[in-house]
Image 1 (tube, rainbow, N blue to C red):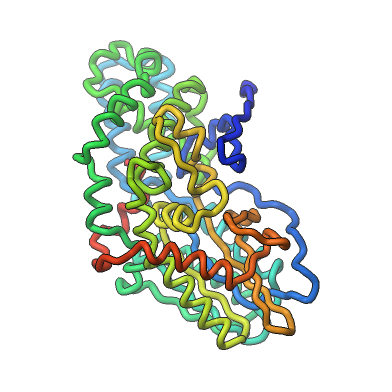
Image 2: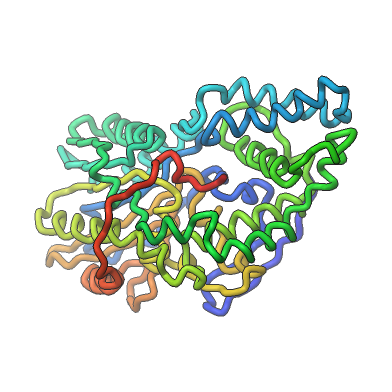
Length: 429
């Protein structure tokens, strides 16, 4: 595959760096979990870990519905019957048939790669912080009611139990937990809807960046017969992106030019940024949807600190809620603000924040004086908070707690029950 020019742009914050994405990274939230770092900053002398608070996105999955495969394959099948596929189109149809045979009846579910991701993340957590998992430590695991999240929880905790059968693990996936694991306010639902006013400018942005003409001409004898070329190109794009999450040897990247992949990704990234992250366009509305989740994290940590015994709180949910949480917490590189839609991708990148299997880990340490430090790992990488600390990336829990409580004060309105379907939480339509 051709080499792409890598360039770097320093944002005004001086913290985030933008690098031109690889073809796999242009898959947005379908980017498969990247390899984690091999080492960490040692804890200050006298401190050892005793508690972990975690929120993880489910592992790699197939696309969210069978229809998304069928709609694309139907176009190719129909034109094949009329001998209107080019030689490349005929070849792509064969690949699509192979993909459909693998995905049929599995849509929305975690793939074997997703299972491995969860087991490997759990294994590294255990080996990196063994003090948390000694003896009969208590592991409280809660999941979204989505099957892929519940299965991710199962694979993750099963690996922990394999490593220490004495662990006490409590696993639950009840609707009652959705009010913090996967909450979206009614105002947030309205803002994210297809009828929201900001969508008008966004649709113009999509038309500028999604250019299907060349691809259609390479696949079909009469490309004008395709009534919605943009939609078909996007359909193929998502299938191409998901190939990195399945265990079949099929690729579609050869049929795209890099500029075409990057153009679609910019539109998806822009939508994710506006609907979930720190885009000024949402006025902070979407990050505030994570307030119930952040409150649960703070309260659970306070309970663990009071009890003083090794423990972990594990939560398994979706990309959108993890993104909002990271923005609300102002985790390094996750809350950047940009008003120019043409520059959204320079300020914030969805594949970096929430790939398949993405996770946030708060690792708590204490010394003999019971002084508490906390370190944050995003996708197992050390990240900073906008707080002063002479031991960064280790921060005083009292300082962090006070900072988080300031974010929690943003909520004065009543928190309504979550009303969404969990199967729609990965917003890659």
